[in-house]
Image 1 (cartoon, rainbow, N blue to C red):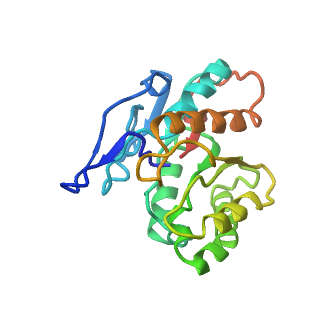
Image 2 (cartoon, helix red, strand yellow):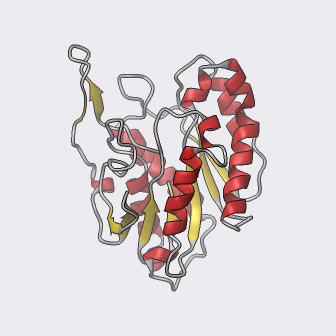
Length: 243
């Protein structure tokens, strides 16, 4: 979920930059924290993944809009802690248990559990790279299904809510195969929301800034179906979402 909203590639120079535009729905809020690259809780701001997905230009993603919409709908949650872990342009095979990206993610997630913390959900938006190869596309459902089960197993949370996004686009020709794999996963406490139809950047691959905001709200509404209508726990460490 490393956002690319507002990221523009200069075709003349090849330089990629972020336009710096932060919508109202993504503005910093003292009730929204993030776990930074140094495993410290800080006030969250866009780009949410700037110190995580360091080899790419980051822009607006759905994470901040997700958190703000959650708080608007359920202020009883108190503070929300976001745990950014995404690395853009990666294949689901790179997230297998025991590999570098998986281990890095789990290190961050477990750090967010200090002080008797609790992970409330996993937010997962990935798969564009898996559309390049037919073999990868056909293997996607089995791989991501195992990934979800491994995360739950390692966190000792067999019913951890998972909010998955079905692709709006892809890097290759097998988008529909991956989409159907995502939409076809049958797993308890998994909700799949569909990004298809949301407006894209000029690169026709990444979601535009307004689309990132809309997706964040859609994911928040899906997450809130797992949350009681009121909450007495205001501690950010008890209300963390991996993104």
